[in-house]
Length: 280
Image 1 (cartoon, rainbow, N blue to C red):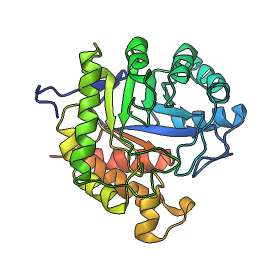
Image 2: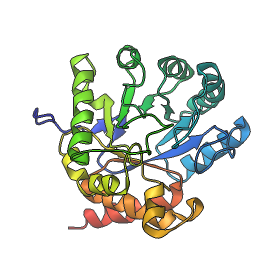
Image 3: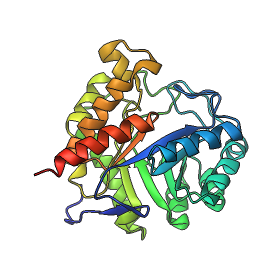
């Protein structure tokens, strides 16, 4: 972990004095929660505008599902899915992140106007990913994932999940800084549900403050994920309560950005929690 004593206060142009919501926009036919709902551009743009109106600071556009067992999409197909959506949203002044693990998609998204690269592999999915991120010099969200989406939930294993995840993330952040990226362009995501079982996810959630203390902003993506079902039995479209509980836990630990499906409810919960935190 970093011992430089810095504390990032802005990321991707956002003031991190208060929490921010990243709205999920999957332009895919097969994402675990909303696959097929927004894979046509008119529906995608309407949903993005709706989330911005509800208070989302960022729209995270993904053209390939990375749910457990998902099949890989070609570079050409992924670009074809995301490019027109990114162009339209960025032309409206909306801050867009591209959810991809492919350098060529990162490049195409940057040309289309994306301001953030959000890589579920933490820039390890392709040998060119780190160099591409440095060359593009956009804000980056580095996520931890053990294994590949096709097999990551088969038998995830750690000696100390939080320590290993946080060490990887700090190492990637330091590698980016060594390559010339400023800390204000780097965000870390522990990757809830990506190559982690229920215990791993809960341990990481319980120790998020350790990752926050490293100095870089932290993004938490726990929305509607299967750990909520493992705890409660809730189906994927009935996990709002569990998703909000995870958001509140993250907020209490100092997490800055929350990647969610349910923007309006999350914005409301964070507004109340933030007001309480500033009341004394």
